[in-house]
Amino acid sequence: MILAEMTSPEIDALPRDIVVLIPVASCEQHSLHLPVFTDSMIGGEVARRVHERCPDDVLVLPVQWLGYSQHHIRYAGTVTARSETHLLLMMDIVSCMVGHGFKKILIMNSHGGNGANISVLLQRLMECFGDQSVEFYSRWAWASGGKLDAIRELGGAGSGHAGETETSMIMAMRPDLVRTDRLDADGERDGMRVPGLASYYRFDQRTQHGGVGDPRPATAEKGKRMLDASADEIAAQITEIRSLRPFG
Image (cartoon, rainbow, N blue to C red; front, side, top):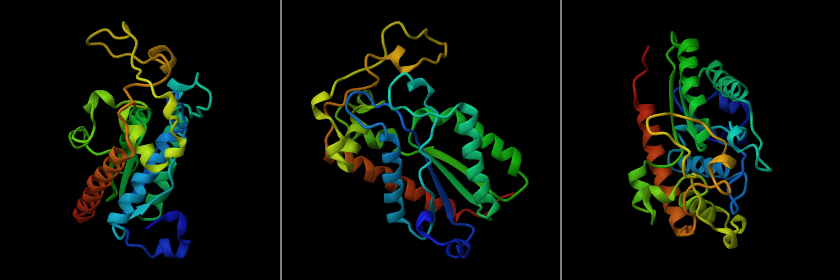
């Protein structure tokens, strides 16, 4: 079921154990060759393919395209929320669906910068709805690394921000939006890390031109296989989530 294409009475008639899939993404720079809406395009396409595989088990919401991208803000075209705004926006969306009586919620993330807020979101949802029989889950929009490494020429090393994986996926979806004359490897500058310590840097500080990984081996054929592998994995999990007995 696609929420945006349904009437309110049709949504109200849905079984409340259907899995609500909420794609969260971003609008931010993707190096020299990919559009700023890359993460949202990928999240939306994976969600569409998931729906094709299990239409009676999932209710797909529109992509939440405003993400946390402060670390990309020095690059033109990046549109970002502050951390608390982003967290509250996700909280409000989930709260609406819980308020409508839906019991199983899956956050599907296609932007790495959203990860910290999603972790806090799950904590806050437990605090707010812990006494109700509502289940909350989150996962990455891509298939697990091993499945994608079998497709990628460079394995995990070629992935990252605007690398082989994202470039291949956009080539499969919208090849006209990939500036193939500008493909160039990029990555973290030397001396940016101290072993054993965590830190947080802007991408203009970390990289040469905003990418991580090597997009040059990307192909549309790989992208289609990556999108299909991701949709297959998530659809199987949605079927499993729906089959679980309610807890609480």
